Length: 387
Image (cartoon, rainbow, N blue to C red; front, side):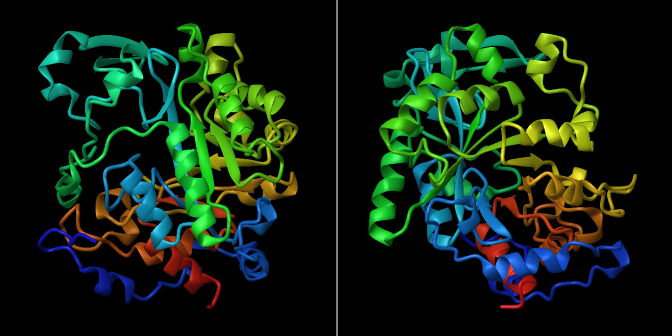
């Protein structure tokens, strides 16, 4: 494990930090419910959502706080640290292979900008209404993409991770499935994966639909059942509905800011916003084809103008009333990513009181959380459950 930058609390100091109380935030209600469900979970990962511990710790893009995201090194470390689920984001290559990148723009996560043979591939595209200039997976065959090497996405925040620049290639999803099967056999229990379709409407417009090739791979590797140790996710409800017609694998709808609209809604003229989807009627609609939601943390506890947490919303209670699980995103250790209440010192890249932040969010009754630092989240979950 890499050391933190100078001036940042060391790992042992962070792991020994005390969890702050949350009474001042008004965090009552479903906390005891979450703790009881956590004690009742087997944690054995037998392929049912009911088997997942609560709170479930989801390695966001692997263990991206310590390794370049969406690499086999990041996934392996997340699993070795104890993450209950390891996340992949999927985008296609020009020849239709699914690869693991957070975005199809690979300018900041590979060494493509330093490769003169691909200089002519640099272009500007509009994706989901936003203009990007760079290099994109859909302009590369898999063979070409495999010549690139992965790099740290936010080196300014995580300079230690640049030690691993160039060590790994961009993995295909099939490689991840094989890795998960191998690790599952070694550990004697299934390795859970959390798989997102990225920009599915955009890619379908290019003739590179994500859902059909994804379903084929899930069927090939036996992860297409209701009890499969894999969760599908997307910010586009239409993608989740399409997947629901193809496989029985558990499904989650991701939700961003309240005023935003899923891009497939924009394209189809559906006027609903995320604010509409988190109302009881919207949650009932989601529950008709999905088993959970993945809201941004701000939909669980909003922040005030200074970036401090306010009182929790009713989203956890409302979603649970519809039988939906909640796996919000994303908690990170560094000050710059934490609510203002939990920042410590003046270094934005130093670790803050992340245990206090976890305690606040866990107390709302969420079922799990996406994190860049799975080891920290596991300790926080153990604290919360009194273990």
